[in-house]
Length: 510
Image 1: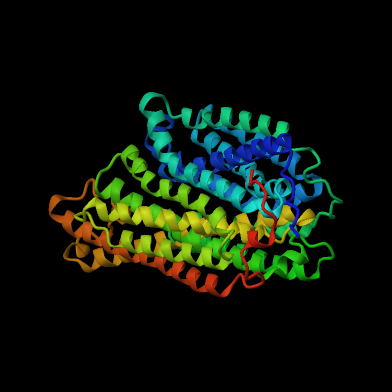
Image 2: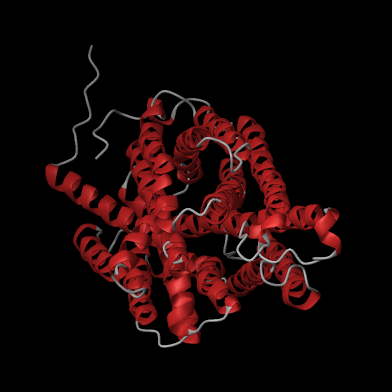
């Protein structure tokens, strides 16, 4: 007796699903692109808008602040009002604020537009996974998440390349104008391919205290961590918002245990695999963001590479990321999520270990190997973590779960940049102050970021050594974070020990 095969989806349904996936991938791409594309334009912006150093930092940080603070709000609104309309509203806000940033006449206006971009981006981050989960059943979701993660990762790495190319022929405003056609195309594809009923379900009451506490807590922690790069660990600008944010998040956790309809549904909080995935996302993005920050400083500041050359070198990480992310979806048919994620974390750790040994005199081939191996590792672990996190989440909980997962990623990025930079800077300061020049030149100036311009020739060797020591310590922290992730992933994801696809009928992924 033969088992009847399940019929494949109708061609129209498959075509609509492909179109929806393309739209969600473009949304993820443009959000990640804006994380890094601005960096290469900062010198031009500083000259043309007469921006102070602090304003330049907030042009970058305002975007991260908007993202981190409003992800819980937009996730909750998506569950209440529908995933598609809130996602479209986020895209519209992101596009309009991108145009506002391009037209900004002064630094204050540009910072405001960047915060607005982050607010719109929060809805996109919170709800792309929710819409993807609405669109794809579990049997085909892993491969789709692989594409989503891969294209988003390419956007992150493509930022310096795109920015360098645009600045080579046009003004700085083009790095913001480029978002507008991508947003218009994405909105059109969503209207065409994602049904208005994709997130239709009985809305849960909005947990207003939970939304307020979560947003205030994330905003406080993110603000405090961001300001450490400008005024390291001063009581008022850094420690006060950090303490305030921590207290708000503690109050949020307490409230979630008492609320009748909590912002984070009880089924999500009780899902061990989901909580483990959030912790792994935090650890992996701490390592990822810290590594890219310091490797960029090494090549661009200490070795004098151009922004375009530095960005092009990231292709060595983007290419294996893209390939491995696609492999992760197929490997999910044969291996358990624990095996895939643990392998990805271990591989990423090997890549970072190679990058941690790089010095100004090291052949680039060693850094290239580190890029390739790290890219392959992150290409496995990112879609693997996302797939297992959203595997058992459905219906009215997908928006809140997607928001919580992406909040852990944003916090990992913010903490990674702040913690790694703070530790690396402290080590550089200590090394410089312990040198013979530390007695006569107590301030190392821009040396902690590898910038040796203005340093007298006789001091450059000492300054370079001080930065290198900070670099090695910083990447050691990133490596330790991924090694913790290896241990955690090896002990997590136990509720389902068989491959995800092994229990599902074989149907075309797309």
